[in-house]
Length: 140
Image (cartoon, rainbow, N blue to C red; front, side):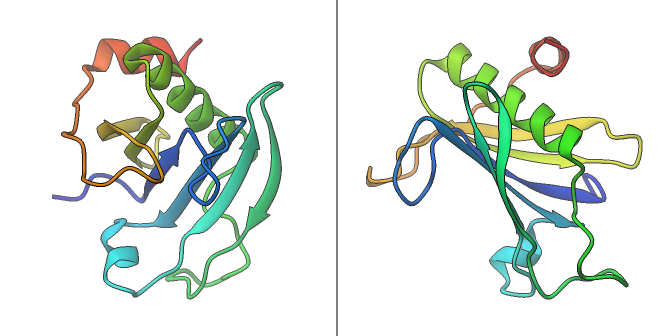
């Protein structure tokens, strides 16, 4: 089953440093499994939390589209995903790793979210937030 034509993860704390003032959105065209399989490197967007704005963009390679310099996400989509991540972090009272997919109509589907700590061992159990919560957080 295809979840969307773009997918990725939102980290509500920066993966390398654990900095909670930065949100990192990673995205690829198609299924995120291409990253796990080593077939693609995702675009990486770093967002400053307060005020919410994009501070850096790194385009991933190789790209499975014609123009490999084209971003996977628009600035508006990046900020929407960042707001969603912040909302889920507030809802669950812990930094989150949010797996998402987006289809052509730009509807965001949260595959799952889990508590995320860059230095903590083990993998927390995933949560599957309902569509009402997602809609409320996307449209805040």
